Amino acid sequence: MADRAKGSGDYFVNLLIHGFFRLVLLLPYKIRVPFAGWFMARLVAPLAGYTGRIRANLAYTCPELTKPQVARLCYEVPNNVGRSLIEIYSGDHFISRVRDTPLSGPGAEALQKAHSTKRPVVLVTGHFGNYDAPRAALIARGYNVGAIYMPMKNAFFNEHYEVAISNIGEPLFARGRRGLGQMLKFLRAGGMTGFLVDQYMKHGAPLQFFGKTAPTALSAAELALKYDALLVPIYGIRADNGLDFTIQVDAPIEHTDAKTMTQALNDSLEQLVRQHMGQWFWIHRRWKPERQARHQRKRAAAKIGPGPTA
Image 1: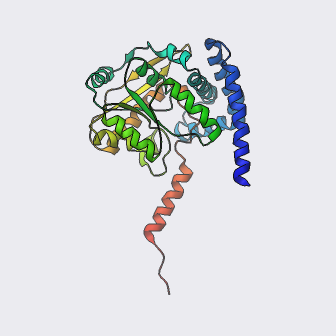
Image 2: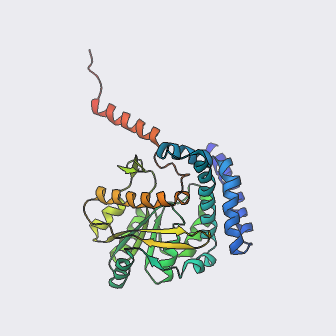
Image 3: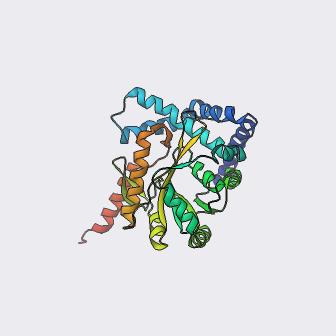
């Protein structure tokens, strides 16, 4: 009964979200994107608890921010999230907006060379700006770019979400054994595979992000080492007009060890976020300090073992 009720809830939530997207997509692109941002910031974020989550994350990592600065970010962050979602669902309109955006940054030339020589590339970004803008721009240039993604928990929503991200470009690899096998084959053949590095991973390495421990997956760096692939941070930075982007390609991360390389990825993203605080998805539970503390207590208890018996 519980699973059935949950399925019904997911179904009706999806009806509302999908219905909203279909209505907003009827608007001209220059109107729909800012409208979706406003709607997310003013209506959805407060009701869904996103505003509280943003405040909690900022209090944990950036206690020096003033109340007006926090209030501004509580609007800017969900505004960017709303814009990003409707852009992804806008398909060809979004692609045409970003396709001719030049690649900038110290890693642009290395990326071009890897494309020419078919050297494998692991592209790494974060939930920042619009993370699909670089993928759309590269594919439009003829780069062979795939991406690994996490299917949404709401299966009804996931059906049309997969269609939307597929319209921007393929191949896509769902997290899991089958998707991993497909992705490895693609990478070995000289493809470029995109990863998101800024999600909480229960069994991730205890690396640093904004001065706090943030469990982080090492998989992107491990693949780069195993297949001698370039490890390249890349970002879609939203322009001041709210519609266009700068595609920033950082220099490839030097091959050392997976932890050192992944920390360099975290540092690269943090540096950019500090320059554009409103463009990172502060709605994510990136650190989960309470959960980390519980895991540490469990590990400590397991090491100690049962006490002596009489």
